[in-house]
Image: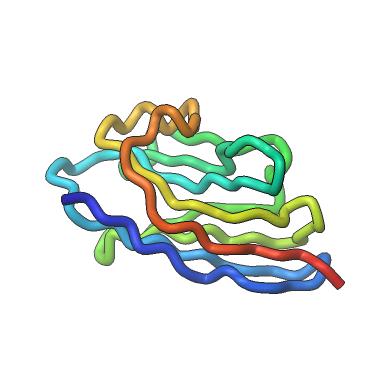
Length: 126
């Protein structure tokens, strides 16, 4: 079974940084899509950054370009979301998600992801 273990949320002041981690296990193929989504109160879940393990397919939401980056440690099957210059509007529950079809990373839509980890709260506030 595919499992995703996310960690790293918390409270940070505006302008600060946080790093989220997502450890994936159970995939049988060499390539798959994995990414981060977020859902703020009263809003729909949205894609933040998605990438295929091969790196061929990527997606960055316009709202996070230049501030958030995704990286991976393939030896640990772990991806990291580095969030810099955080803003109050980044406050949300962040979810790690994955799908066996690697090219769905290019769309980074919640409906395209079959597997979800538990959310982690990120709060950006004074």
